[in-house]
Figure 1 (cartoon, rainbow, N blue to C red):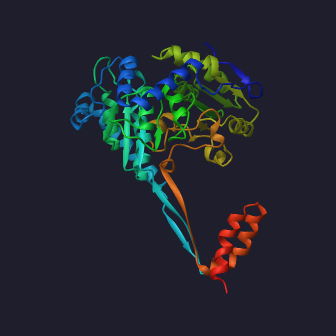
Figure 2 (figure 1 turned 90 degrees about the vertical axis):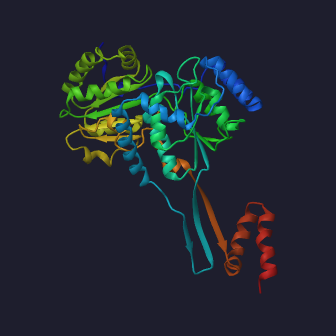
Figure 3 (figure 1 turned 120 degrees about the horizontal axis):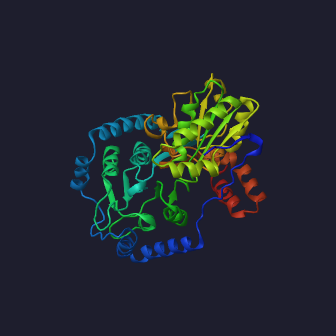
Length: 428
């Protein structure tokens, strides 16, 4: 397999935003309507149909959560604890405080910062179980001060009320105590509308399959959601100082996600382009997920040649990748020129995997070019802001003519009257 080498101007990724087939959308609508009207009964019915599991009690007990520790390796527990500490420390720096500005002119303006009261966290199970995503979604919410986090995750084994033990340990280490063994669109519906066993939430975050994504899209407005994430992406911007083995390994770290993942090298060095092409062919051959990675590279991968690093940065800013690695001689020199990227990894030792698992920044990132206007999941996603306005009598009398004038200009006489009546009663 040879990844194509093409001039940057001749390359474009065209990927439709995934909104599912009509049949998938109809199925999700029926599931959500069923859960909305029937509650637990519908959740049990759909869980038995899709997960082949009969669940009597949705919520896991403390003993069941604690028992998961005996099923995972001590090395995993320590790694999760260390990663959680890094993630928590990073997100602590994002916290905002309520502020008030009392002025001598008789006004006080401010902003009250409050955490959301209750958040739902969707966590895939089975083969697509990612304990790291539990940390990335739960910890910012906890740092924000969210008092209630309800995690849902599908039964891990057909016919049994089990849940992936690695997911449970990650949740426990993050601080999540309310966990339900239910997945799919029925879990999203239960979180959005509430059932007898699962109280409704204010926001739903976390990845899932197409049915979960469509369900989140369907309930948006009833609750908030994080995003409808697309396939994973990485761009490596590299010059001739980069090690082709490192570059190829990092491209493959995204290509192995799924067949629609995008892995792209942008470089002014033809020599590096050819060396990375050879490395990709060599490294992909021994990957356990070789077929997935090869299909990804074939359909959405490329090595793009540019005339200079400046042109390469223009390409990066237009593509607005989820992950961007900058492996050049002086990476910090170019940081200020990068406008659009979900996460930026600088230097040859800052592999994307470092950020995905351990460093501390969030790995829930904007995809499909939405880094042009979106950001990584953060503490900000779990707070709400209320404006505070106070006017003294003197301040209102001073500003009333301008307020009334603006209201009348817009044809809203009652708005104008609301201040004028106070002037009539209070003015001198």
